[in-house]
Length: 114
Length: 115
Image 1: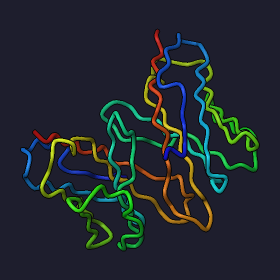
Image 2: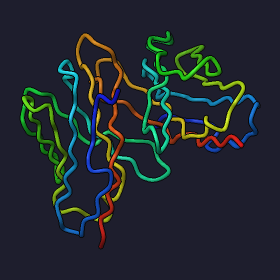
Image 3: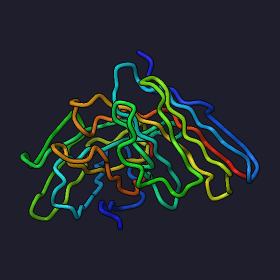
């Protein structure tokens, strides 16, 4: 059972463009939604995270948009750069009073062309 | 600061052999996670420990897999006997309880190839 569904599986954008990655979750008990970034040969690293009490969180060129009623959240990368080329994973968990387990999406490979 | 340390970085073995993967979490972190990453299944949690105690091993594929955490600074994941379908990248991650459940710090991974 895949509790977090991520799309698209891959994306190619030009430098300066906007990259958008979408995720949908099933478990309404989830209340913590991080995004991880993974470069080839490296482990995933936390990029940005959001809780459902806000609809948007921005850190630099990276923005998470959250739609609780639709059980969806997305990552927007503004002014995409070749250095952003990586695999991006969304994840979900219960932040309080629940398991520490993170459920990850399948990942999306982003390629930003110069 | 040293991050999560994993060894070996690459392991090539033959089917039926025992494989032991090692992890040193970030000093002071009290939760440790073992993940497996493959193209087909993505990133899967195998087991996690809290204060050296296994909390959830529901992701361990079968009895051939075992994990231990004898102290706060060391953990092992053992596969015996290994099979070609175990070929994957295995990650160890650690976190400090109370830092937010998503703040897991991953190691560089061990790429395992079973021939």
